[in-house]
Image 1 (tube, rainbow, N blue to C red):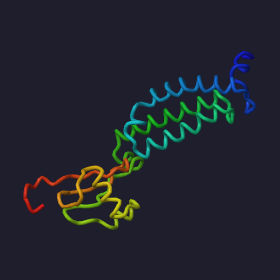
Image 2: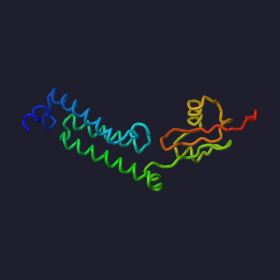
Image 3: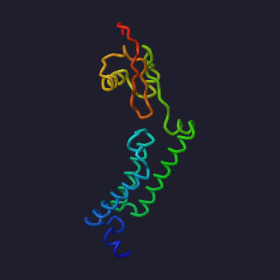
Image 4: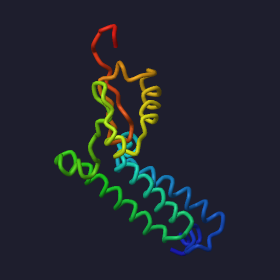
Length: 168
């Protein structure tokens, strides 16, 4: 135990070597925790997943700098990963819980009508909608767009009209 204390230190009075040892160990511990948590934390990019990533980083960093005891920090992080996995699993099984945790898509535009109240709900302006249109579809106007939806990830998806009418 004394050797572990010499390598990792205790409290916030740590040497550069001890912080380096903690960082080295925490890197691999974090890698294992992320593997246990699943790839969705970084791939899906919903608010649910973003919260987990931010909190995990904040907690693990406290273990590196000695603000919290090292092993207790690892345990707290593992519990967070398990809770995240559990809530994700429950969301798959229950649509109501999925809606509560992840939210629902919000229709912003449909067939020539911009829903201003939904833009306000999502804190978007019409120019924000148009910017997303240009970035996502390379189109300059909504003429060829059937729907625009704010997804639960925060991205706006655009459904291009299948009409082949030249007047579009």
